[in-house]
Length: 409
Ligand code: 5CA
Ligand code: ZN
Image (cartoon, rainbow, N blue to C red; front, side, top):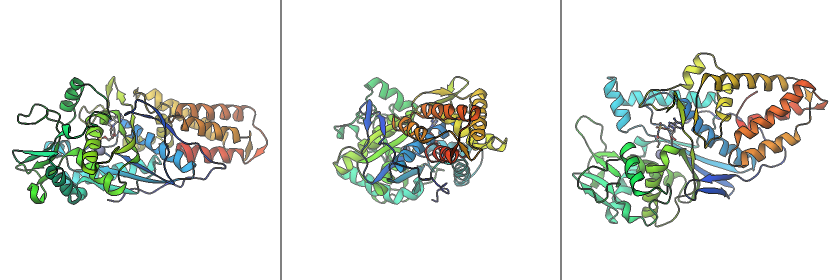
């Protein structure tokens, strides 16, 4: 699958700082130590509806991770998937009487447009579940042949008990895991499973649903977690730096994915850090496609909202906090964008070298975007009130805001 065009990332004077980030698995902040090529996998969309502000906030967090790395003069190897076949997508297609492939293609195309408008850096590999199937089948066969998977009425399940590290990503108790498993695509009540939490690796073909050749598994389609594992192992390998997604993916998705990979390879860990963004709500409830309480990026764009303001609205909340989208959040961002643009609109101004370092430090400190915004606010306020004579300072601020925050002034 093709991704979307990259916006240029200006190089800044000096060098950025190493990223210290909250890791769900250890429950604390760790300093990442990627090699010259940092490796990140971010779970992509299930394309049955348009990109909402919750998705955008999550992708914004991982865009910042990359911008911090790029500023340390590293290269970034970024992989993202598209869950272009799964139950919710097929259900929506049936509900609306449309072809599921057309639905997936249309929503993926819209997602690309939204990501481009928001200046999110594109993945180097953008891989659909469907195109990953030939790589998924042998992994499921290997798990089965190793005794880590078993068959139930033609479906193949992963046995969580075969991973000694199982539970180590989300660190939840048994009851919490069971509840979340039922809520998020699992089937803990299905009779015949070895452990109620065991997730499906391969679903045997169902009447009226698409299916693919599964070699010795028989025709069917892949489970959700193995999809991301196959794509990550293929393009990044074990032990990559960051596995990212919203906090609703910590369990079961990232827990199960880590287990699949660890049992498959005999290596540990799957990822050095599991990083999770908070949930964005609307009217008091998590924004979600299934509930329908959504504010779409594309709708705001078509209403004439500047994408840079949308991005500033996302940046005004710390990525790990849960927050509520309101009209006021957007109005504040529009106002801030105006102040910043006014401040950089002259050729000279207040010296900005210290500001560059403040923004760098804020982002390296667990992606503290609100602190970075506050630093730019202080510079802009003084610049708008007093000005200065440092030639090129406003240009340096523009480049900093562009390179590190993805906002074009
Ligand atoms: N295709 C899978 C991942 S492999 C999936 O979860 N797709 S999704 O379309 O449901 O979500 C895409 C990303 O947006 C995930 O990282 C998810 O955690 C995140 N996300 C979904 N809803 C919200 C929300 N309300 N706030 C913040 N992030 C969200
Ligand atoms: Zn995923």
